[in-house]
Length: 96
Image 1 (cartoon, rainbow, N blue to C red):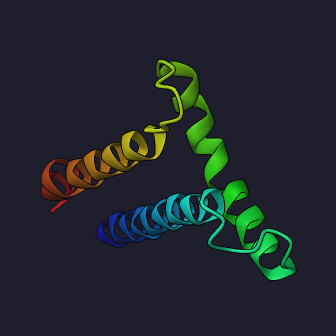
Image 2 (cartoon, rainbow, N blue to C red; image 1 turned 180 degrees about the horizontal axis):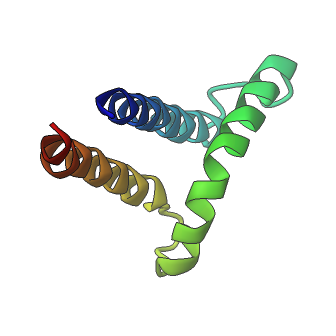
Image 3 (cartoon, one colour; image 1 turned 180 degrees about the vertical axis):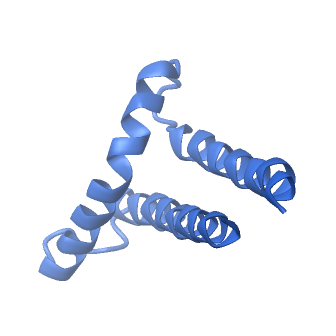
């Protein structure tokens, strides 16, 4: 059972970094640091969007409109942190 918890923790940790990469990429794209017409940049952006949008879209619906500021990645990162802490402080000790 501990192996399952470690696997879930690893998946959450990987998704954590994908969310951060997506946020950084969106900033680079918004400030024209990367060339959006480059096929590689477009495919990376599309991949990051497809990986993160299913989790971010429901959060965006619940949050109020803050103008041009999107805090949904921060909310999702806090949620992932909470789940990881719950796994290691509550669920894992109960199974051992």
